[in-house]
View 1 (cartoon, rainbow, N blue to C red):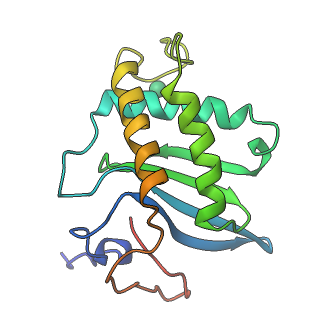
View 2 (cartoon, rainbow, N blue to C red):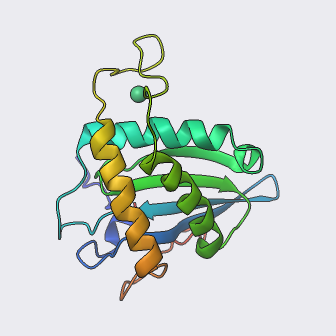
View 3 (cartoon, protein in one colour):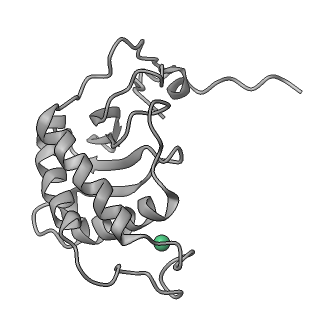
Length: 174
Ligand SMILES: [Zn+2]
């Protein structure tokens, strides 16, 4: 069997990443820009990743907030967790700067940090693992990330070679 190639995004050094908001990649679809952001909440391989139940609750509450936001709902393509459990992916119509996305994320996570009520969509009809939620830990993670975004905003991956694929797309992370 032929050896599989390491995909470009895994070639980024994941031992020196700080929490922040980073452009992961930019694409064009039918002439319009589509941008993927890494909402990096923890330092990979340097501190514990998030608990699956907490990140699942973050997914539900922030997705609901984004989809109900009168300004941003139409611009959001996707919101979901990173498989490594160190942050979230946000895919947007347009090419906003990390600083602009920071303002959106500060609002979204402030909502989550103060959230008091049932987790939206946490019923068997709506969710593939509806018992796997942890609202207190989701709020704790939101509060910590808010402080990180307010105190030291990182939006450039440090000291990494940015891989480029054959189509010219630049990868910052997987
Ligand atoms: Zn779910």
